[in-house]
Length: 219
Ligand code: DX5
Ligand code: ZN
Image (cartoon, rainbow, N blue to C red; front, side, top):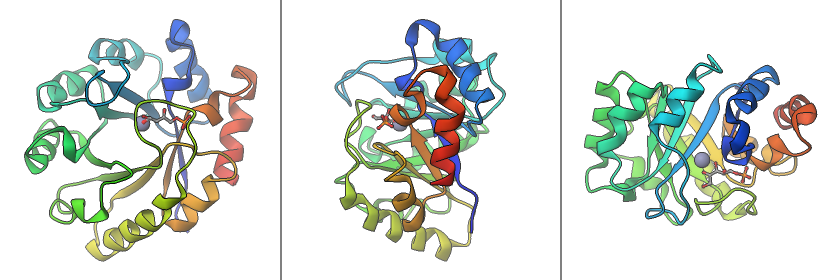
């Protein structure tokens, strides 16, 4: 079976100590650093921009998995790429030209991802499968950490796993929202190979990060 990667979301970190928090999850075994970018418009919350990504870059060499919950996304693709993002993911609803946005991310030399909201169907990726490096399924409505996992998304994860395998391409299947020790195995059984975890990573403070990440990976 495929290795499971854990991508802690720094949305649940202590924002007053973000650099230290990124170092701590890196040392605790995080595979990727998941960065939730929100604009107060596409989603009802406002978080961080390219300047913060750039400042955090010196605290970890692990891949920065930048999840853009902003509309429009296109004007900020280059700033995030230059700030040090390795993977840049956009929602199809963030603009009229998903294919062009993905092309732009690839042209910047970065891995390109598509993120599907709970009500967005699996078919949304059918005509961009030749371009994407990652598909992310939201198992909560985007905007906040600490929400309950939507079990309705498991069938979509399975449907996307089939599409990915049929494509013959190496595409990561990531699940974001409400991942804990109980829901992690469900997402993996459905076909996910990357798990985002905010609340479940940061619970208990720095001393618990390594155990938390190990528990999710082993779950
Ligand atoms: C929600 C974000 C998620 C979120 C996950 O909009 O995309 O990455 O922070 O948080 P938990 O793991 O707490 O559900
Ligand atoms: Zn996210």
